Length: 66
Image (cartoon, rainbow, N blue to C red; front, top):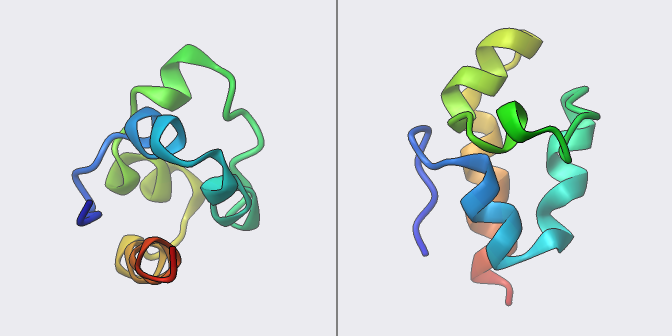
């Protein structure tokens, strides 16, 4: 799966919950919340003041290593 800034967070976590620490790193501690799971990476990063491209790169590296 190729992750983009438009990928839904819930889809990522459903594929591999081991990706959760990358979201915790940006301060997204509400991963079980229905609204958080339905956000895109870009939306979550905007709320948490982080760069979505940086998170996308980390997530793609994580999935490439699997």
